Amino acid sequence: MVARSQPRGTRRSSPLRNPVVRTGVLLGACFTCLFWAWLWIANRVPEYESLAQIRNVSAGVLLVLLMGIPVLRFRRHPAKMFLAGLTAWTLLSIAYTAMQLNFSLLRSRMGSLQLFMLGAVCYGFVAVFFWVFLLCVETRQRHIAQALGPSPASSRARARRLPD
Image 1 (cartoon, rainbow, N blue to C red):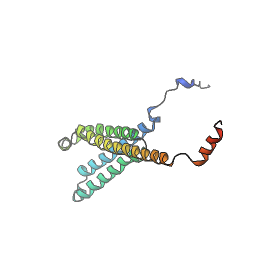
Image 2 (image 1 turned 90 degrees about the vertical axis):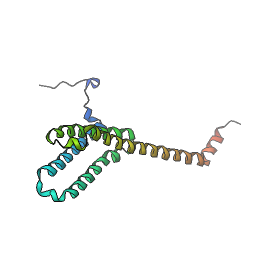
Image 3 (image 1 turned 90 degrees about the horizontal axis):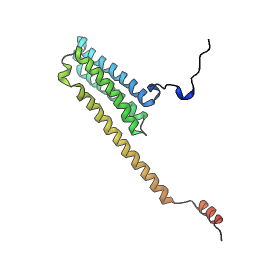
Image 4 (image 1 turned 60 degrees about the vertical axis):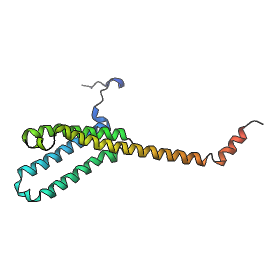
């Protein structure tokens, strides 16, 4: 049996085809796995209790490194950077809410909304920083281009075209 092909305009596109959403979802899954492993080791493996400070610092460093993925990927598009980070952090916040059911003291440490706002504010600051940086770079490039003016070859070509 031959499969029917759909006309071009009627094909449904998956939201995961969008690089911003795809990066956010994959990063959210990575955040969730990292945080779940962090909690599991902290609460279910008592042999590592003496290494709690090393565990916490290493998990924090891994979290910051993962947070840098959308920053590096979308460094020229601050809005996309913010949306990808916000998508990832939303998924982490939802997973954090689910983890609070198993780990009752987690809620006393930080609420889900507080965790979400922590990530949103961090990504917001970074996105605004990159936006202002890109504005400064573009302004400088335009200023340099204006200061140099037209090249002598282009002014000669314009002079030849002018009627006498």
